[in-house]
Length: 363
Image (tube, rainbow, N blue to C red; front, side):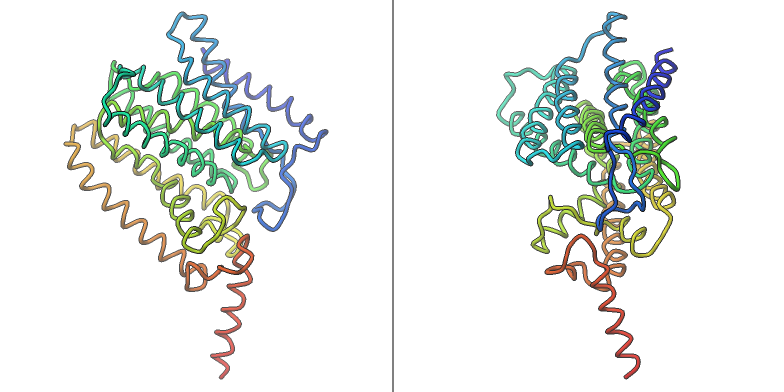
């Protein structure tokens, strides 16, 4: 019943939000960094937060345990991210908000798993490392919000395997509330109905991508803490490969990793090579879904954790190499070739290389 009510509420809220957004100009404009051709309503990702707000109300009414630390962290992120969609928020404010939210998320996981606050030094060191990783993953997930269907496709490709793992691998022990994962799927399907189109009706904005990133980190960290199996981090496979390697590429190029750009491989495919947004998004979602389903099958058949890691991490490494080789080719032969150029586009670099090649042929 909660799923039906949530879907109805989310649909109604969007149909109310769309005319308001148009009236007050809450639109993602077209510029040299964008992959869309017309202004599109943005910040529609508030529906993800709304679905979790409904979850909290349901817990309150039904007498279920309330996850206050998780929800306060989620609320902080949602408010700051929504304001950032309306007007730019200073980077340090966003970073502080994300750090506080990640701390509350880890506090909630510690409560869920029974880890005491008087933990050992090694556990505190692990918690600090997880805090850094969590904030990094929030931002990597946010960086993936660039094409029609990309964010929703990645969320769905993670949530479905997570639901299967929760239902059939953990059985009655559940690493997370099944309703919470189910509501994530429901909200994602509603969002994709408006976003997975040739001409999308709305974008999620930071409020959607950051909130989804927060939720995926909560689910995956809960799995890793409860099982000790770091292979579950590969549920983020597409995000780690695309966003993670692009951040490293820009660092090596001496670029500002927080400045806008369009050198993600999916942006190159769509903007410079004119591939379908929905096709590219589907491929990325398919890769991530594949890792999720492999993890589900491995664990449903109780494959030893060490063997899972020995199989999956080398596969992940091979995909990273393939990604870099393909990207190098699409960027005209060098991953750092845009250095010193306008890093929002590599079109000028590609054009120069093509002209240079044409001159050599004519000679």
